[in-house]
Image (tube, rainbow, N blue to C red; front, side):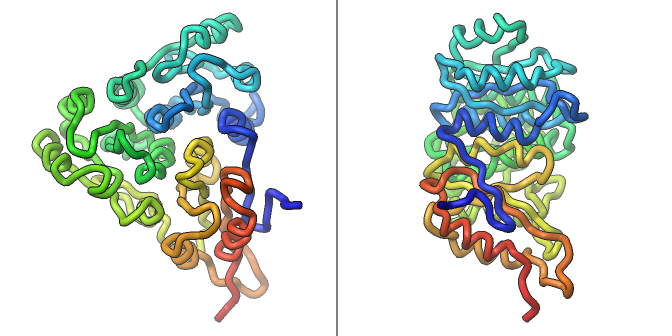
Length: 350
């Protein structure tokens, strides 16, 4: 029998990602009486990664939204019951539930039947939806965080793996996410650049997914282009977590030893479950996402964790590190969880 916990890790899993987002929502919003009760729910189709990435910035304050996956044409009973349980306040937002992308009218009608107000952002077109969400996030309800007001993230429309850590940062700071192809800029994404030319646009990924040619084309439209890159998604997740943020640079600033950092851990193979945990980046532990393999911790991730882990005082005392494991034992093996524990637990004096 495998338990979901070790001393310094907590595993959050469900049969499928739709249910997992409900569990994560319940962890973060356990009661209607809490001071941080959500104003809205972002309802996101789960079939492709694009809409989850787009919806992540809407989670951030002042909206303070829960994040739930849905099938395009069917609202699972557990998802409906979670929305009813949350009873989002609707304060300072156009509606209690924001439906993103190609969610069917059938789902919207079912919500309205229960007296839940709704609004839509976008369509089946990922570029148009991202553009509309970016405008909503930057103009209609600007993010509370200053970083979110001055940055836009650019992800690959063809391969989401290298940008998988980005939605966590987006939920944390309210930075919108738009998409480009490897070798071209779609018209809707170009429109965003033309509307907000003074923002810093950060490309997430290597030249394998977004070419230098596209980067150069962006520089002809906007004043500042940065790139969050690495040799693989694991390295990119570490670079984002470790990088110090400035007015022009995105980063989590998780680069000091001994302050008790917490992280979420997921895999690109089960991206839906990794994405299900973005509320952990929004409130509470404010966790960056570090990407690992189902059966092992990549060297770059393991070495990074050890640079942060505090040396154990005598007697042991806080701060302590913690890890949120997103997915079941097929997604991230128990032996991998134990290895993470070994990297997170207080180290003995040399």
